[in-house]
Image (cartoon, rainbow, N blue to C red; front, side):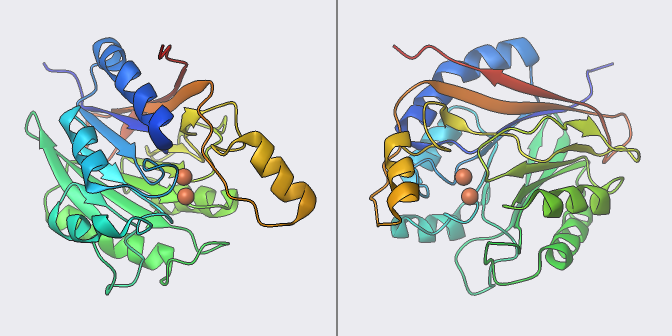
Length: 266
Ligand SMILES: [Fe+2]
Ligand SMILES: [Fe+2]
């Protein structure tokens, strides 16, 4: 019998150092964990804000199956038409319907269909529509498309909203994983009804930073309250991810393992 499917989900890739870290680490992670699917949050991949079509293509060329986004989805205007055209890149489903792109996709490997859904929290972020109701509608849509497994990337600021999403979808999807804060949380677990959950996966970016930004600039902004032009740090990359092993039953997981590695780039 073949192994149960698994998903390697990598948190927010930040700037060129995050992309280099991903490129450096992914082959070894594949070799070690043999994931069926690789899903990456790419909302900070272009210089820390947004993603371009070229960067997305580069991620897909490395065998990434799907890219999720977040509050920086539309920062690079060039990518808007790409978001409409390419199925495997998703932005939060609860953005306005008039905005470019779509909120979910289905990818298939080894005869297994994985639904990937991106939603964004309503606390301290402004997606335009309510997260829970839109997530519900999108999950139903993915089930109608015959998904064996579903992963939800909850891109949110507040831990409370992410925890609530975990409970709300426990037993109804394979995994609920949080992104956006760039700091990994220590609460990865399989919830009682079989859904893998973590409040925040963490980032694939510079650890020598304030959540990706050069720390001197972030501290200056906090101390002075004056405008400071933020730049992504280029120092001390680390890659934060989770490996989710699915269960025999559809829409269930047996384990979620946090992975944090510091690839040597130079
Ligand atoms: Fe982010
Ligand atoms: Fe974000």
